[in-house]
Length: 265
Image (cartoon, rainbow, N blue to C red; front, top):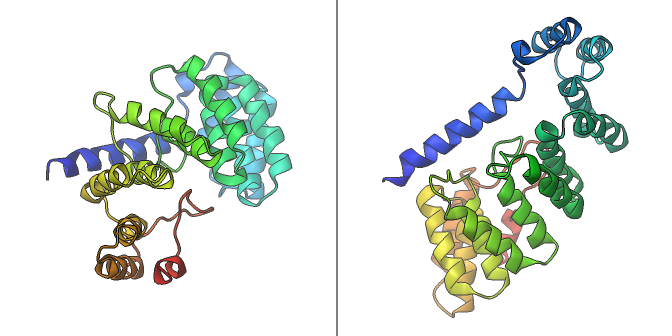
């Protein structure tokens, strides 16, 4: 039971982090026009992507052309609607103006939406120069950006490098584990046929948060070892039907598993 309070604390921290991105401390900004731009940004009452919201962001940019958050926020609706060309122009401008605060978001979006793993790694590497101790978290709060970086290496079939990043990260003092951290490490070990290590991490994942994909991989290990796996398979199916599976509002998680895959095991 000791891990549950720590887990909930980590989720609380992630929620705070995610919410803070929508607000800017205007008192920290120099210049009267830039303060006004910040106030417009913070008090934008239009829904994201609406004409009113975009016009408010344009006003903020006119007042303060160096205000990176306005470019970033203006880019988001284009990203969600699949207009990646316009999104990239705006987010690149935001990164140019404030790389320390915008590289992590751009890198995460390259991974999440574009599956541009090499481009994401480049952004995370650049970000590390500004934040050597703490890269921060993904915009949706699911992953520490070091985990995101490891996912990119795994996707590029550099799985040993991905494992090294994750193992070192998990040994960090007071590290707050995310929703799927042990699962991603477990799958990476599984893909290298290191089944003992894979199962060890799936079991650790179960103690933090268990979900269908994690149970499915445990059943796969059991089947490979010629052990009874049907109970685990059925548990994975039931867990999926209960709605406990990897979810994202806009895209699909890396190492996402679908019900049909579980049923076919």
